[in-house]
Length: 324
Image (cartoon, rainbow, N blue to C red; front, side):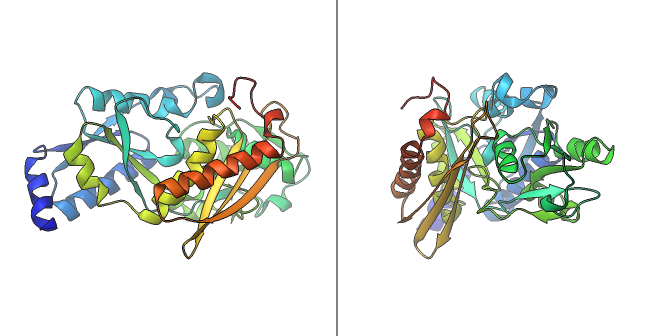
């Protein structure tokens, strides 16, 4: 019965399903991966629509100063809205916590390595970096956590796609840079990783390493198909992580980290908050666990973590405009 229903859905689908994607090498890898799975599993004819987003164009300023991570998805959403594409593939950590009206995350796929990675041509670990070493990252989350461990470091902004960031390191502009391990592994560049940070001490961003598939809310048949591809453990963990950020008014201008891991049916979440204006202030950290079996419980765990952060002083770290 389920198979007949699936075939009926596919039969009513568009003759060709179009994926909107950024044109960076990593984004194209991710979109091609989704294309190949949808083709192999459901027999869909899928093509890619490559696009350049504002986030790809603005490389001389930090995202927190020019509109946030939404700059990486707006053009893709416009393509969905206007009917030029049917779904968009994102690195989940780049997806804003609240999508515009009319759009939904139809699926979250299994997470790759969620850790941050140290990439350097001279030093194997963070501890090996000399006093005053120059480390490249434009992530406020990474800045505050790096300075919590090594307040002597000089953190310099680093924008651009993954290949651009590696080239800037190789050109001698930095002693080391910090990147997501997932992207390096997906592009066959795991050999560039000198060491991966323990996620309990360098907490990843909400959703880091996972893929999110966005569609129009009214695309009911496509949503039904994509629902079959959800990786439930990643889906629930990511919803818990994103709930922390949503409850605190999270954006890329907030140095907030949240990462959840499973122990049987129990989900443990670690969250940390730094001060964007005074990045050397001590980090606020919390850890909570709960039995989680559905999305509501996952969200409740994330919201409880946010409440705990408020209880230990988050109000003094958050922008004045962030709701209590």
